[in-house]
Image (cartoon, rainbow, N blue to C red; front, side, top):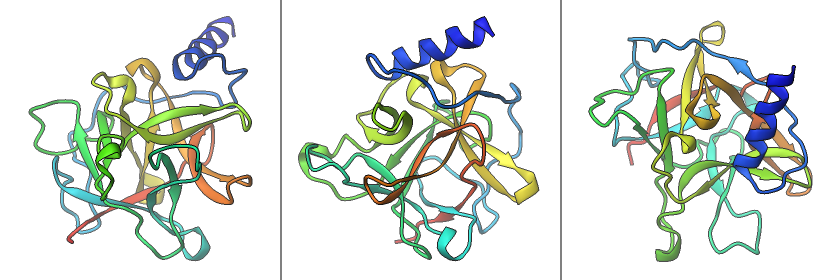
Length: 211
């Protein structure tokens, strides 16, 4: 218990100066990567440099894709990650493995995610996924910002075999203790956002972005 408390305290200091508390507990994932690549909805391996839509496995009102949004008018660049309207795919996203020689995207390995969207010149580099602590809600939200060269700004894709889908996790400090990325409805913003969670990961599939 003492070790867990120290870890969560260190995580809060790492993600944002002076957060008050953490609202989730870690899960432990296998340390060995699977040799089978992550597959898109056509059954093809995800490849570095190509773009994809990351869409929910839910149906009807629970559907939608990962999208970059501007929920805070005080910021210069769109930096909030939300779930798009039902039955839409969201924004195109480029996935880049931490391994520079990788030819496919493998599960359980570190990846950087970046929105492939039109932006102003000021915001062109502020499209990479990151985690940001929001003190009013006590949540660690998925957001966007500038590229971070080490694995502290990267994520993993994990297989959810029972759902025939995938989930995305975040591993602070590049360690083996990871947290699910899940759906969170932000009442103050009136938007479904993505945040770190203990339970109910946001399960997804990857669709080729062909336009």
